[in-house]
Image (cartoon, rainbow, N blue to C red; front, side, top):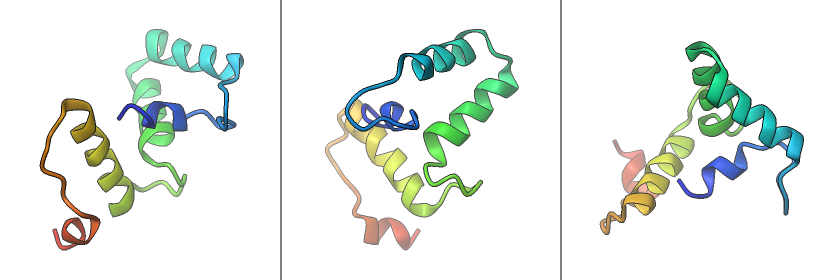
Length: 83
């Protein structure tokens, strides 16, 4: 999950634009619950922007959470696809 927040900025190749960071903080700190959920879904989870969370995106989210909390058992994508 440590890398996922940084993929939420549109032009984040090597740096974060200050405007994007301020807009994100504004939404997450002062936005309505609907605005926060919309940002989280569209910018953090739905990485390809198709309006759905695909199995690959979900797998990446779960893997990032496992990395964050230090879960030692990792599930491969092929095993995950069978679920």
